[in-house]
Image 1 (tube, rainbow, N blue to C red):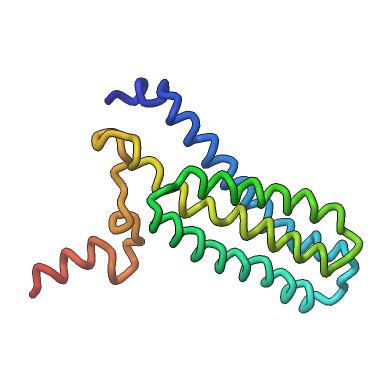
Image 2 (spheres, rainbow, N blue to C red):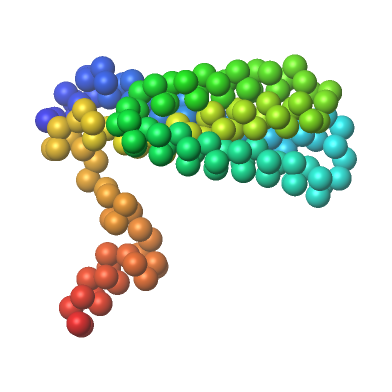
Length: 162
């Protein structure tokens, strides 16, 4: 499959848009959660940092539960759409509660739990519809840092010595 033909495929354009939305939401959350918490009246930097950890902890739990359920049911599309919509609603509602730290952190937790689920699920989608020749050549093993002791360079040299 040629590169030009690949970029004409509507599914590839959809995947690019999903990737853009996912990365944008993750970047927005990473940069703005502390600012939103600070705008609720929390003054201490330690308190802002500790309250910032709550949405991220909720996101970790959400990622484990939703991704495990997605793997069990072998369904990806709705496991991405519904959390992303819930995350967007959480972001919108967090602006309504900007005067109350408790509700703002709760809504930011909903937003983080919803938006951060989409990233690991997204990377399972290209292999579901792209031909083998069109799939990206990078695998988790080939994307490791050359400095890592588990990188292909070190693994290959260790394999030749044993």
